Image 1 (cartoon, rainbow, N blue to C red):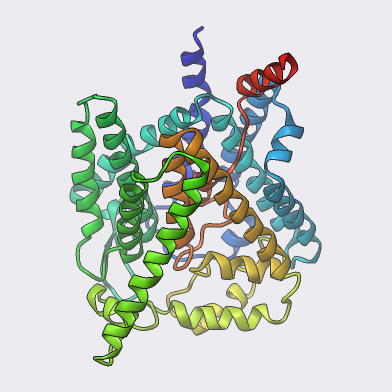
Image 2: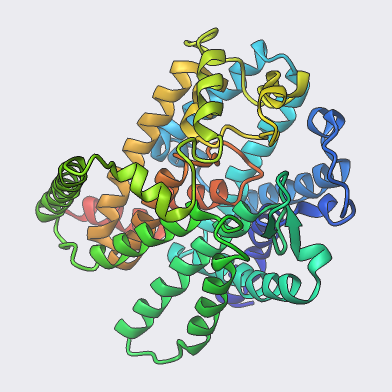
Length: 436
């Protein structure tokens, strides 16, 4: 069996994982039409989903064992991710639901294991691209099909009665996340093909048209504005990165200059609008049809921060905040019944406290540093990682995906954030040093 075929077969495991977290999950298709969210579902979860993910985790472990990967080297290459996983495990000790938290921690570890299945196939950029492309090629057309012709499945209504397109997902925001991710992927692939002199990009254009159709949504209120904004930022980053230099000295200056330009633009716009008693945020919200609370998000953040102040150092414990007592009585205060904090950083602070937030911040800093190095060593892969890194960081300002194993963006984040050295390259470097 050829290496390419072996890679293709092993990558079906992460494909199934990514397909599940980017749709309604396995059990979701057996509970269509059930809108009441019972506390039992939060505390116990679905045995069907649990068995499905456990099977994939076991399969992933078997694949990694057969590959005889060097776990010590992987941990040394990802120290801050390792300590985050350790701390989340320790925090189970003071969780209000330790058994539930432990199950969620196992699934969190599972997402890392399945991610390593992808990253131990080389070249890594091709392996990641294979997993994403397989999912998008199926996901996007089925979303359009369900939205247009099977509306009892592909369309839903929020608590105010407004129509929203959901496709294969549970809600408009997850569909928007898939569309923004797929949109950047297909545009990146078009640019990559053009550089390689390959003209087979018509299918990418077709998929981009379907993506833009889904993002438009039924109405201004029924679309995922966050996903549209992050997609536009991703496009700006993608095209901007095409001018990035390919040496270590200049790449640092490139990012510094880019940051300065963005700050200056923000200051100029703020001063200009201030002269007319306007603000950037206020004008932007009016353009997108949103209110000043960001559809209730700012009020939710205030409540969460007040709860977080009770345990500012260690947090309430991993995997326990959004279960029990109707999510800390937040459902009583917010009629839309939030199931996440709609801010990944606040969610980490509440769950893991200042310690967890610092550890995760160090993980982000080290990830940025490694991706910056990758831009110099492997330009296409480096740009791919940097663009998605920026998008996911900004997306977590209004949504929450960090440390959520059931979230599609967390799995994608692991794929672009984890460092897994190529054993062939490492061996070559060792041989060279010994020869010298």
